[in-house]
Length: 291
Image (cartoon, rainbow, N blue to C red):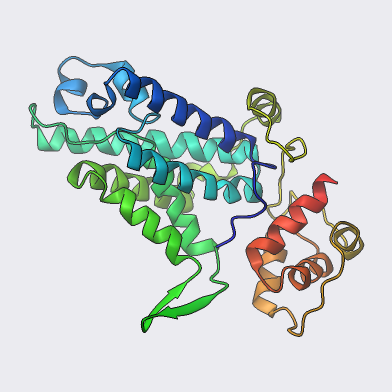
């Protein structure tokens, strides 16, 4: 499944967060402390280790978790491109905070001082992202393998399942807490979906992040309804030469892009160039904004 153009174009917050997770994981791994970052009842209600609360959402506890976690974080950068860096920053903060509160609540209920019940890593953000992934990202390709039906979204679900079961019970709990956090965000609890950080946040992360080879400087994007500027079909044509296709874009695909704030003609043109792949068309429209 295509998560958009390669690199971190229009996704500076994702880039910074991904690099931070990788660096903290490597740092604690070199010190041999990765396996000790998971939360327990004693950490919260006994010694109150604040540093562990913070590090538990930034550093993974093992290399396999790091690989699958970074892959999913990298793919989910598509949401930053869709809602903009300022709103996506709120989504990150909300997901991690609410998921962490659920984890603390679960530890309080279980009251097992000896058990390390919660593995470390940004599970709250990753599994919260599966909520909009399930509801908002359409299936563009279906296929069969040995008689079993799959879609282009199946690979992302399989990677998520691998991460969810990577530490068995210790990873299932934070994964479920992340899904709950993502559901609350989607339900617009306290109108959280309207909240966003000031414009300088995206600019700050753009300067803070390491540059990506071959990508133009990231710019904050806002393509939700009422916030996005319209892009005409001529703009899309100028940046992406016409590609022949025998299939007229489906009306529901056009409606999906229009609902995100894009001009109808531009949405249709982008779908034609993307061979009716909604995700690729979305990124074509976003890239046309940056030119």
